[in-house]
Image (cartoon, rainbow, N blue to C red; front, side, top):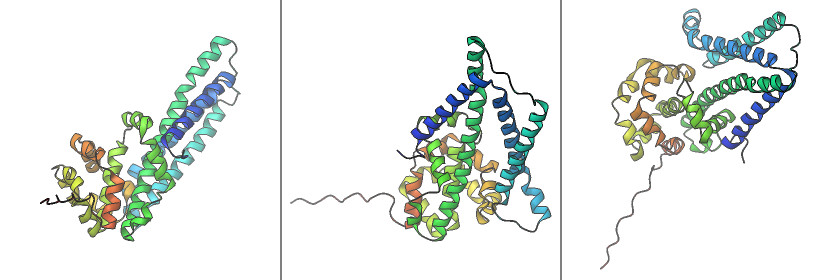
Length: 287
């Protein structure tokens, strides 16, 4: 069993929840609440930087690396998380009193699930998002080098993203994912092939792409200036937050077409230039 597979990640999440419950029973939930609040503030700060910093950076600087926004958001989130931890520790510097008695310990264990689930949800959404960006860069590299062989081993973040987006775990996260990550990143990975015109033409000519390509909602998306600009400069973090992409991805028709499409196989076939589906054998003439 792979360490990045859905059953392994599901067991890891259950184990983390169990540890949090045991910690709440033994030590109380004070530290878990501090950790959850700090993590939430750090995530909010990182998202604010990611969503609103590109405009000022573009106006102040002539240019910056494509990953600057993504890593800037990470640094901003970590700094806010650290300062929040220090601030909360200064406000509540006394050690939390361990619960005594069966009733208080039971309540503390149950309440510990709340911060545990919030932390797990935030970590899973972050893995989905960062893994989606990593997969798009992986597809871009393979398309640029004209080599489908490079797609045999995806990056670690992409493997983790696949793990938390499949099986029971994926179905649960799909219902609580505010970014609609599964459809948005699948559509983004397909659009990445536009950097290689040959691979893009190979992709849209595949028979199994017909249902998706013929949708009217995708035509404005393929001509949108913001989308084309983000693709041209590999600003995939920006691309995934564009409302044009999100609106197209959440469309029921697009969602159904994307879920019926084997994304990785279609991309590999487009880069390799091989037929997506085997030709039907001709009927033999029997005399």
